[in-house]
Image 1 (cartoon, rainbow, N blue to C red):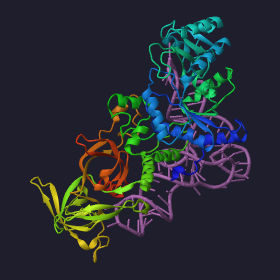
Image 2: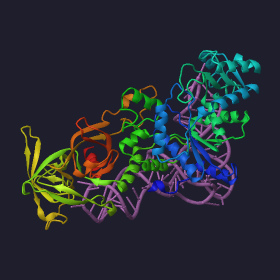
Image 3: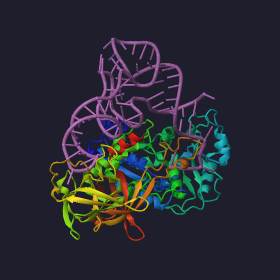
Image 4: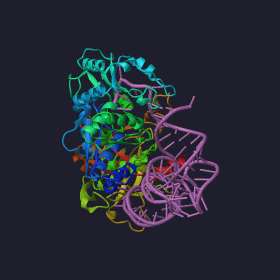
Length: 564
RNA sequence: UGGGGCGUCGCCAAGCGGUUAGGCACCGGGUUUUGAUCUCGGCAUACGUAGGUUCGAAUCCUACCGCCCCAGCCA
């Protein structure tokens, strides 16, 4: 499998190679994956996970899982747990306990005090709106906050009282004293600490009422953990001067290197956690693990394998350029994997009853079928065959529509996969003219051999009516009808939701062998696609299968082109 | 009109001064009891544009153009 091959290089690995060559960190490589537990992980996070854990593996280093939990307002324990589950499921190990930025709150506080003592941080009493005004804008410099001229003693006293819960939310913040005229907005005395009462932090409870900001927390947490390379996405590029400033201005002897790469965009979906949260909260999808979601949990439920997602991350590469990857790449990854790993089965999604009139009533044959056409190690199974079977309605037409059509037509023949050749003698219709069943005959001499004197081109799948397992099958399509749902800045991305993204098929007929499948099991339903059994059942106890992806379908493509 | 990035095939992406890897997609041929798989072949005189340096430039220099990010007490 391509995902297990040598990882291809990228500019970050080149930096690491150079650092190893120059013995910068004594040959050690330690990375970290630092999610904020305020949502479920998505395929974009998978890119970062594969990068960070992949590098750690290849360089015989390690990768920490560290929750960046400095904003208790938005975070909760459900997300802490789902994130760990998803990283594990993707196949990565962070060795021991997960880490939390909140583990370092006391140390972080001490570094803040150190900055204050050095005259490099001050307590500011401006309110949020004033801070914004004082900051200036992109083209005009900011102006100093009154607090900037506080004495060290005043700042120390105020900060201590902030911690001691003497002030309400928003009364004061702690700020770094850098440069209010800096062209980089991040350097205009960024906020380091804010006051937050009345929230219970999932790790520290009510121990703290001041919480450090990301820009303060991240570099120090990295340094505490001895991270060598701190990999993050492009939007943090102009936070790097602040990252470096902080580590240069406190007494810590570790200075990780921040390197930025571009985030993943995927066509026909959204990747921002804010937007995904909105879809979940507004009930526009069925939760974070809805199979249409680009979340790891959604992809898992859809039937994607960890290997296929790793392969995807490998294929898309790591660069600094903006990119929007086509869905076709993801689909190709899962097809590649499942093609070699999934058992073949037959399932009739849109059943049409077929009576084989020259087949003895009550007789049942057990036909043998390979579980994989190219891999004998998958073994074989028995498929019952009888007088009444189901085929898919799409596999029959009364009149042959064109000479390339090679499925069943009236007075025509077709091969039943793993079975006999049958001929359609008559299509029975109801009063409305809808075909209700087919009267056919079979050729007993065609089991495992081609008929004599004629060529039967088509092969269709089928299921014994008597032995079929009824199921619900869910067909998924892209979540959005537009390749880039958030293209128009003033429009609402929700307007582009695809209302055809889910089709539920009832009364599907599966071959007997699928009946024993366990939740999460994946199959190729021949000629249809790859399907995964859902953990849920229908109200009346019938199994539910989710379609992961269709098979590549050149015929559908040709038909599409003929129409268009 | 401040700062930081990015621009190589429809979409990703190698390339790091010596004459454009690869994958996806697409187009054709072969095998096939899945119109699948597999397989064979095709698919950028060209690297945002214009100049310059050089025997030689996607790679170096200059100037333009286009796109993305930054004005949270979010991360």
